[in-house]
Amino acid sequence: MAVGINGMGRIGRLAMRAACGGAHREAGDPGCDNRLDIRHVNEISGGAATTAHLLAFDSVQGRWRADVGTGDDST
Image 1 (tube, helix red, strand yellow):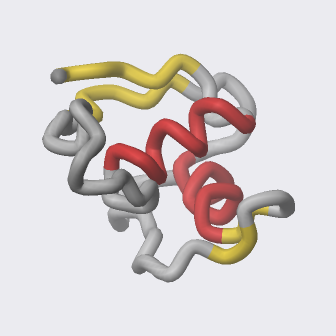
Image 2: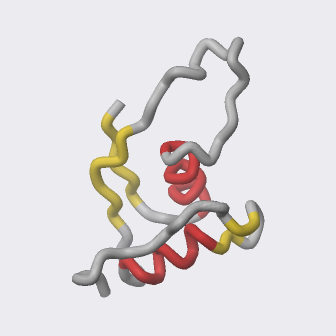
């Protein structure tokens, strides 16, 4: 399913983690094969670097064990 995330607050970051494989679902779960295709992220405060940092270092979920970064043209 193609989705856009409007804001990278608590829920936006959790949705991004889930879409990138950060959420574990049991094999018997009827939705275990559902995939989210993140097409757009809309964040009004902070830039891409701030969003990447908040995604990597979440105060509640802990540090994400994945490479999180931005492209060279981000601010």
